[in-house]
Amino acid sequence: PGSTAGVAFGPLTQQAIATTHQLITGPEPGVRFRDTAVVVPRSGYFYTIDAVYDSSGAILRDALVLFDSHGKVVATSVQADTGETCDGCGAITFNDGYWRLYNVLNAFVIPGFTYPVLFLDTSTVEGRALSLITFDTKGRYGSYRIYEYVVTCILGDSQ
Image (tube, rainbow, N blue to C red; front, top):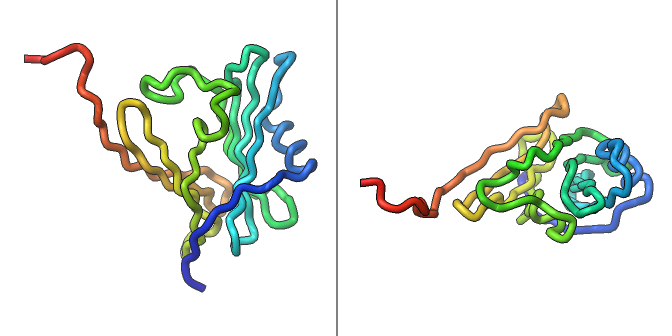
């Protein structure tokens, strides 16, 4: 079979929500969650983009989770917020939505890749960027990013 492209955003099952929340839940009280399903047509897989936020709306952790068509977790990438998510973007908040974590433009099924590849806009206020991300057969997260710095330094001329 050849390559295919396409992406759809769909509803999550209660089982998928419970599974992803277990991955990102910590000891913090009064948290809120955001969950988005990214369906890759004709692949038999879907991704979820999940995040947990504290009571003020600041992000604590996020996860990218790959599920098979039966709702079984195939691979995960969980990250704690370090406050340095992006160069000059500011803190990610609950009101920002999933696109600040993984701005999905498209998804591909590509021969030679075990799982679907997500195509993301990972641009920041300082540069334009595009990324391809997926997992390997051992469940390890992998990415390839093309970045173009487009902002002039705010400190003025260095001469």
